[in-house]
Amino acid sequence: MTSFLRSLADFIEPTGLVWLLLSALVVIKLKHRKWRALILPATAWLLLTLTAATALPHALVASLEARWKPVEISTLPECDAIIVLGGGMEPSISEPAGIHMKGAADRLFTGLMLAKKGRGRLLVLGGGMCKMRSGIESEADAAMRWVEEWQLSPVPVQSLGNCTDTHDEAVKVSALAARHGWKKVALVTSAYHMTRAKAVFENAGTAVVAVPCNYVSMTLREQKAKWIEVPNAGNLAHLEAWMHEMIGWWAYRFCGWI
Image 1 (cartoon, rainbow, N blue to C red):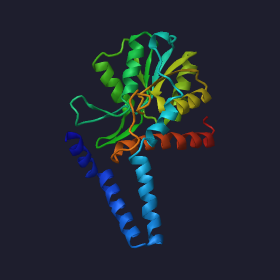
Image 2: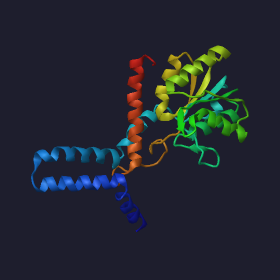
Image 3: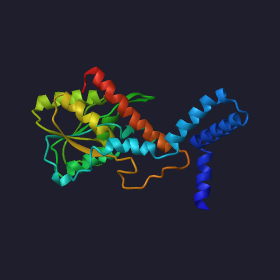
Image 4: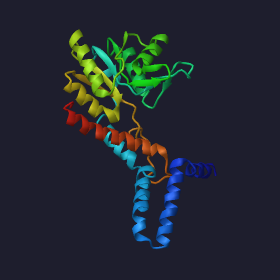
């Protein structure tokens, strides 16, 4: 009964509700044999079904994550620095802690674990720009303040400041590596993002040890995905992550960054 009620609730949430409305529209067009008028709603219904009600998005993201198997921290070499890419948190004046954790927060916690296990002599935090009422705030600066306030890192922490994208983070790290004579850095980011991130860092001239984390697909989390389920926004988020990496890869290639 609980499962039934949960599924019923899913159908009145935005994704499920849109799917129901499209289904009704398709049925009406079929009933009145309006074949030409059926093309667009039927196409939209099929796309929404495939991307929100099946395990296809999990399979697509898993195809990116499968290239980077989980690592055992004890087997990693000691690096000159641990680079944690942004996307895990943002500054917040509403949260008591002053920060808001996001879906990729595993990146920061993985970086802290590497530091505690002696895998690097410096923790370097990346991140984007956040528009606040008080002005532009840096994700990396906010994360650094939080880490230092709670004394979470046994090694010094450095912020890359405001970065526009992964390429910007790579360029800034390359400059630091050249200035300090770094030979190798540990690169921490989501597994689905690692292929593009590693390529752009190495193209910028920085040798990296890949440390993937934040596995989001059911397959890589060793869970069984449902091939048919109630349409939900979570599946659409997985599709968005996959598309972002595909588009990002070709955009970076076009710009000559990888």
